[in-house]
Image (cartoon, rainbow, N blue to C red; front, side):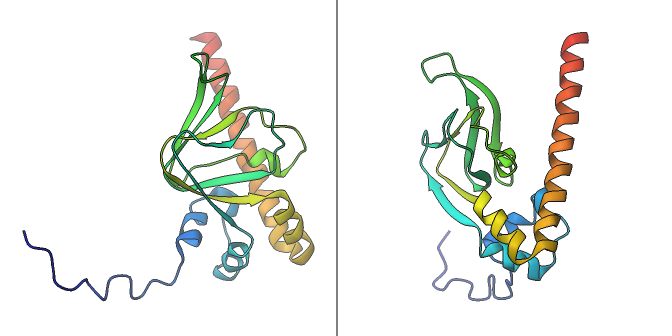
Length: 167
């Protein structure tokens, strides 16, 4: 099959949202945002790229904020790479992690390591505080959504613990 002489010039011609906003829309922490709010949030987001086996953060490092995977993969693990590693989660595009760091000053409880060439979005504690000062309504929307996400994760963890004890 021959390749076309010209690319499809109309592909994406009506695209109004950036890759960042499209990714953010899939994250429950930003649920219920208007287009204008997503536009404001986009200005605070940090873009990062990682190579396979590169640390996003290490266990016990200071927690600075949360990450959202645009593409690629990240594993969350404890232990070392010398055979004692325990993988807690394997995450892919659209997944997010590290959100507890937005609320407290505790160090990271696990390491996050890229498993593939990955592009991540970072939303950090200073960004949240800045948002709370400039736009308290939007900042509080983030906090309420964050509370719901953490509550849901806690319920699921409790359910897993009960199943492990009875199973």
